[in-house]
Image (tube, rainbow, N blue to C red; front, side, top):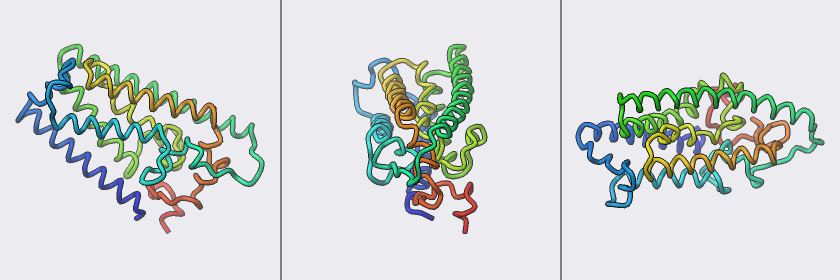
Length: 240
């Protein structure tokens, strides 16, 4: 198992622990979630401030180049992770690839917006409160790494061979924090807006530097160059 895969499993265990903790607090100490209201974020420190900071740092690492400890799939938008192929780039093939994967990405976006709208409807109908919206985000926080390390349903829609080559790798925080848009207040909206910034930077890079997102133009994305080995279940070569 690669070092980065081990590191990501540790992150998964941490996220599961966060989910269990928050779930217990919903029953044991529900007042802890008062931070979700309006500007209560600035009233007194709590453990949720630490979680908010972890999430903000995670998103910052998606919009600036990071030299190590971050999967290539998340950092491939930057020039320092781009390794041009020796051959001349086939621009038409590159354009066709980007159009195809972007169309698939739009389908994922539509499905996720519908899911988010359903969560919003449940909230506005009064079946869940702001704590419920928060818990949806925490569940998605865990599911994010399950998709990376174990099994990803979006891979079926995107037809991506692995996370390293996935067109929507850095959509994770936007998808994670989309339920918080209904919450209002500084805690929820700051995370959602930051996730939009990370999404915008990613999509802008796809438009400006499409060659960084395809293994036929970025050699660092090829299996032969892979050092992450995050999702080995999808690559027969890496099982050997």
